[in-house]
Image 1: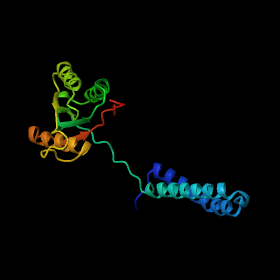
Image 2: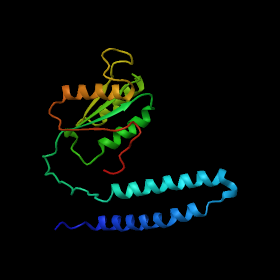
Image 3: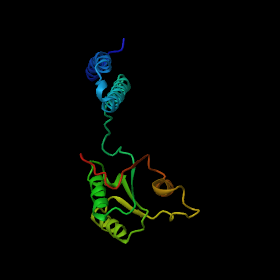
Image 4: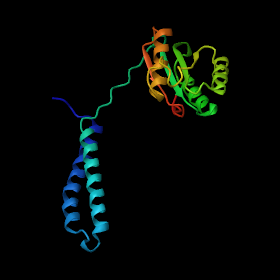
Length: 192
């Protein structure tokens, strides 16, 4: 017999209460629509029906919710991680804040490679990346310029082309890396 975690019981109880509320509310709402103002009543009913469907879908999707237990690593057993930050026209301070929040994680810098993939080919981003390299000498920090838009060497359009180019470079230069993450240019890590 498989036990249900306490958090799943709370989700399931909430889902059942939600379903009961929807079953009771929807017929009442439809029976009590203001027929004198159908121009307002019909959009109101549609919005409530969509909200009910969305809420029930969320409850169903979370019915079997599970969170894997944390997997702790012994010091020295950490895998090499590549973090790719694709950017296109974002200000250098924003990209720097995201990069620093990644570098400040509780992870050995020797096992971290940060790739700033600059689709705008911005001198400010290149300079910011060089300064990061000086500030974090134990980490591998790489500035990458993907092929320009419209180039036959570009592996995709827009952000996909930027990410595909950075991934290809990462696979080529760092084949020993086992984890690759992408982080938007404005996506600061909130917790070490």
